[in-house]
Length: 415
Image (cartoon, rainbow, N blue to C red):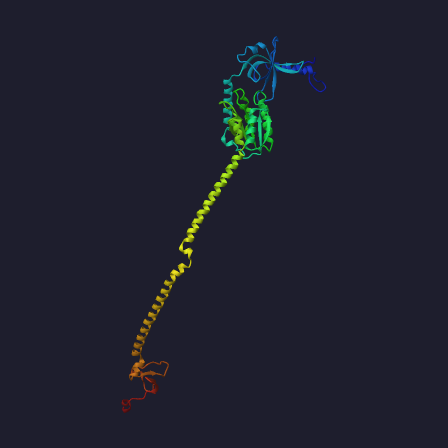
């Protein structure tokens, strides 16, 4: 056998036995460990000294062979069956001859309901702190989805209920049905795989995860942290349709919509076409009735406006005011005539006064107007001082005028 400290290279490779022994040595150094998982196979034949079990991780497709004393299973306070959640204590061993890994346990403890619920509460607090339950993250469902993804147990009552109710509400609805275990150790990885496939399909507009009722242990996969994070990461709206007991799984809080039962999920996702058509017909009737009422009201208003005198006989307003216009014209004419008559009398009176006081009447009484006509300054003579000897004057009388020259007076001649 090759020495353990022999150098390893392409020129000096290890034999298979050396690698197996080294792996076995490393695993044996791990010592005793506590491991949690679900029992998927129990083979404890009577008369044998070793019982063979398979322990599976509830959130991943990983399992490990476990061996123990059959009496260890018989002394368990709770019957151990496939799907039971347990915590075991043992030492991992690597069998070099077969190259297999197993776990030899000396203690096995079923995980009680109280502890399971406490773990669920811890996961609930963690996800709540991260905001995965926040209502603002919830996406609205499409009103009329053309394709619905359904994850449920094969030929389960939940699957039949969803399909039957949906077909009764809308016979043209399409489903992409994915069968998956909904309890037990393989449920979580299978549901996650189907969920990822539906979320990647661009035709699927909403996903329903459906299961009938069950005990707390049966519903544990729907409170698994890995599954909850996968649902929260989906781009497609997810509906939780778990017909469960009062202890609801955490999937109800992470999903975009919680339905009380698979039947309720079908009702909330698929619209009732008959009810929608009846609603549309009712809305049409109400709209038509409202429109007719509006037309009648407006027609009544128009009839009232047309019945008013001003619109029934538009020229009546002119006819009614024609007499007033004629009267106003007569009044204006009478006022104008009166004003003309008054002004005529006033003019005649002024003319009489003017003729009486005017120079013509004065001249008619024997007076004359003497004007200097020589020189540049021609003016009426008001004094004898304005009549020097030799001055040329014009003498105007009532019936005409004559020119004359100023000669010396008799007194001046006598002197």
